[in-house]
Each structure stands twice: as structure tokens, then as C-alpha cells.
Length: 102
Image 1 (cartoon, helix red, strand yellow):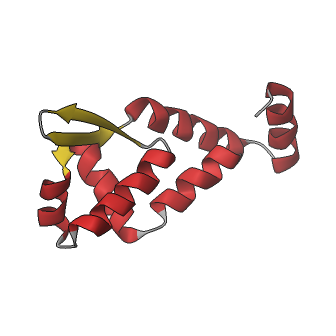
Image 2 (image 1 turned 180 degrees about the horizontal axis):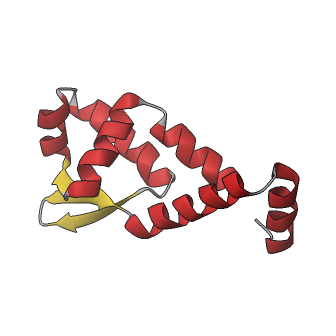
């Protein structure tokens, strides 16, 4: 449940959601995101940090640049967990996750 909350919080900001949507379609560096969003480089970097902490994006260093992309495996797991939550009542879901040690 905590992972779901962390992901929802990370995506609750409109700029972070836009960044995530861009990165789900292609790999981009910070400067490309700055140009796409029209916000400052430090602001983009802070948004990327929050998305990385939620494990929604991956970073890959290429020469001088760091390229970011969506962590599709984590997103698939998130969708699976969220669907499980929607399909069961909250008590059953919480009990199941306690047994898993989540």
C-alpha cells in the first residue's frame, strides 16, 4: 500500500505527470524536458528526483548527459497492484499484503 501511495503522490503534480508521460514514450535528457515543459532546469531536476524515488523512471548516463526513461516494469507492477486494490475490499487487500510482508 505504501508503494501505491508514493506513486500517486509522485504523479499528483501536473509537471511530474507530464514528465512521466514524455518519458513513457521516449528517452530524454533534462535539457529536452526543460524545452518541452518551459520550466527551469532545477525544477525539472527536482521533479525527476521525486519520480526516481518513486521508482517510476530510470536514469542512464551517456557521456556527459543523463537520459531518463519510464521504468515500465515498475509501472506494470503498479497497475497490477492498483487493479488488485480496486477488485477487492480494503480489509482483504490489507490482510493479503501483511502476509506478504508489504
